[in-house]
Amino acid sequence: MIIIVLIKTDHENCRKCYACVRACPVKTISINRGLPEIIEDGCLGCGQCVLACSIGAKQVQDDTPLIQKWIAEEQPVAAIVAPSYAASFDVSAGKLVASLKTVGFSSVQEVAYGAGICAKEQTKLLKETEKTLISTPCPAVVQLVEKHFPNLIENLSPIDSPMLIQAKIVKAVYPNYKVVFIGPCLSKKYESIDVNTGSYVDAVITFKQLNQWYTQEEIDWQQLTEEPWENPKPDIARTFPISGGLLKTSGIEEDVSSMEIVVIEGALRCIEVLKSIDKGEFTPKFVDMLVCEGCVMGPGMVSEKPYVVRAHQISKTVNQNNNYSFNKKIIEVQEKLNFKRTFQARPVIKQTFTDEQVWQTLKETGKVSSRDLINCSACGYDTCWEKAVACLQGMAEKEMCLPFLLRQVPALTSSLMEMSNQLMLSMESINFSTLTLKGTTSKMNVRNQYLEALIKETNNTAKDTMELAKKVLNIASQYQCPTCQDYGDANANDISSDLEIIKKIAAETKIQSEQATIALADIANVLTSIREDSAMILEQEKAIKIVTSSLEQIVSTYDQLLSIGSAMANIGRNYE
Image 1 (cartoon, helix red, strand yellow):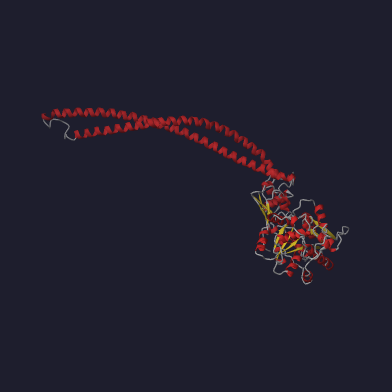
Image 2: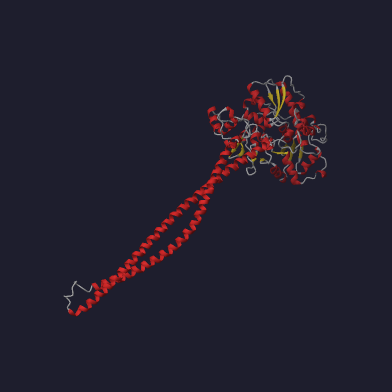
């Protein structure tokens, strides 16, 4: 099986409302940080998530650019159109064929013709088989069995779908043509690349994607001339896309009295019936099963009209004859073709958990007993238990629980109020500290200037003291002994003069030392004041840090409240 990314989520536009999770019948959508991502291994391609997303955040893989490239390269391309076209385009069949020829298709055929052949093959098979058979025109049903009910593979009718039958016919008539299916079904994209269906269908687009193409080309419907289908008239097979269409075409009547032949539509009902068949509780002869409520309700339809209106639009096409010049070779080749197919089990393996593990996960969202399991389905899951299991499997997050979020709001609000009060007190402290800091800064500037003057004065005093000390040393060096007697009377007067100088120097040195001592004491006082001011600044820094921390906590709490509010608002959209 080739894996394609059939449906992507535009995370920038996603509202995290879990509507897609709720709509997914097999819960194959994983939530990571609130954002959904489709797990292809389990996806049916049913497109219910696309229909559920009201803002269009689900994007469907589109083959239109590839088809346009083939046409631009002048490759011949055939369009095979699903019979539900009449409920999408309010134009005649002839103009629809003409519009497809206008955009570049070389051949245009009805899949309803292939549906007629499919119905005949099914009738023949029912006569030959005793076991319960499940119809296979719906590729989403095939995906459902292959991936989620692999035990029922043998119950799938081994018959090609109408799309595959028509594609095989086109390839037989035009071997070098590319074949493009156009219809309401997304899962046909899976069927087209299935290794068990060959390579008969080269591309698939929906009616919506075709309509976008028409818009680009600015198709003027009034200017188009009616053109015929290239296939023989399908007659009643055109009812295939409405409820019971396969049975109607096959000539088989639904038997509600015995429940031997039943029509089952809708994904959840299909799952319900498959479970019953798997358990042996229900053993019908044939189940005509469609994941959509008829193909006319497929996700690729353009119409917004209700089912009955769409079904009526289809019924009006049954007797229309726009097949007056069909290709006779189609009838010739179909007799030689084999319309049987096989299926392959591709089971989705899901990890299982004990009740104890599930309850532990439930307790994380405040659910401690069965009474707490309210099963509101706001998270997208039908039950709290199912959602807890999904959390353990890594498919869901505990924050998806709306009651859990609601219970957090009062505590967060109370915390916010408390932190707001703390912030007000801290802000008052900051205002006071700011005023004090201004004064302290001014005071420190004055003290710094005074300190500079004291240091300068002390340096000068030290310099003068050094000069005086040098003089004393010079005078003292002239004498070898402490008395005058050794030098004679002639030098007595000089010695007396020098002693006077030394006394004078000593007195000056004393004064300078006292001045230096005072200057140093002043320096010490200034330094003490600066240290005290520094301590005050440190206290102010602490206050600022407290306010900053408070602000960060408040912002964080606001973010939590906003996230909860956003989640509640988005989840609430599903209950409007």
